[in-house]
Amino acid sequence: MLYRIAADGLVLFHLSFILFVVFGGLLVLKWRRLMRWHLPAAAWGVAVELFHLPCPLTRWENLMRHAAGQSGYGAGFIEHYVWPVIYPTGLTPTIQLWLAGAVLVINAVVYLRVFRAL
Image (tube, rainbow, N blue to C red; front, side):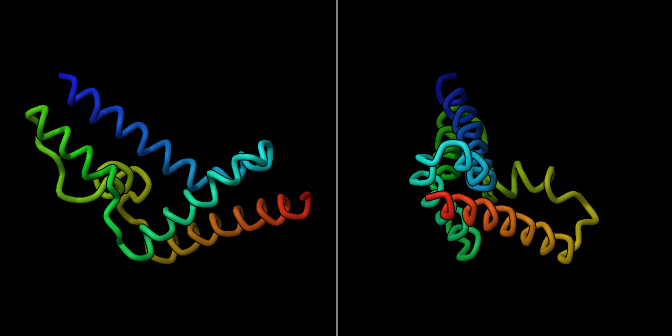
């Protein structure tokens, strides 16, 4: 039972981390001190996606699920939980490029504003 609760909690933490990577720059506008946490998190998120690195949180979740007597999943966290929501059927590579561009532009604008204010 405890392993299952831990695995579910890790899923929530994982999702929170991903949201922080994507939208944390907006929080930096309000709380500048978060920059020292957001920039490394964003760099890790970019590295994981660009180099297809395995995320240790996915491995830990699968280990906890197996310890709880549940089956883990073969793909990563994103493929298992997030892609079905974010990437519904019919989403084209062109749309994905526009979405990625939007995330980059938003964070670039946010950090330009932050650095100008320093």
